[in-house]
Amino acid sequence: MKPSSLSAWLKSCDLERFIEIFEENEVDLKTLRLLTESDLKELGLPFGPRKRILNLLAEEKALDKLAPIGERRQLTVLFCDMVGFTRLAYKLDPETLQVIIRAYEEACATCVNRYEGYVFTMLGDGVVAFFGFPLAHESEAERAIRAGLDIVEAIARLHIKGVGRLQVRIGIASGMVVVASGERNAIGETMNLASRLQTIAKPGSVVVSERVRRMAAGEFEYDDLGET
Image: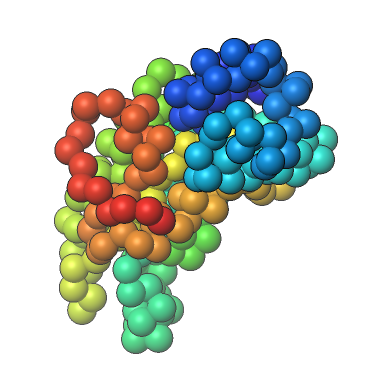
């Protein structure tokens, strides 16, 4: 569901600190979509927020074009990837590899379901889970983080002869996504961000976006990894 007011839109993008500037200049959500970077600069917005707003508006237009083939949803995305899977695929026979994949997928599904998430896709060593689709709950970001931490522990406890300790990397992001569930397809910058965060995560760790950290409030301890 799209925000119906400028203040709601800014809050959904973690840009609420600029609400007063826009209100003073009588800029509503419809007007915002007409502004150029020069206009935003004239209003006094710093370089970073200007670029972010323009990028978000461009993404919104792209998602609107895709909306007829999918459902537009605000959700939290969890990307999980097994460390060293390609090496294992070359090293192990197909039967052993299948045992590993099955145990890995079952562990991920159990942890996601525990926090009422939804496993959207499982492809090889990649697992994508949604929190907020198909049903929305309170504290989606917190649920996703707890599921991610449980997955890390569950995979570390798996013991498969001749394989050694297994580890995962997990990235979590929140935002707007267009979901075509019948085609198992989802599109949006949130998907890309969760995937990027997963790639920078250290083995056995969970990396979350700044927005997820804010939504989960003080439920967890974090290390700042800087810009991604």
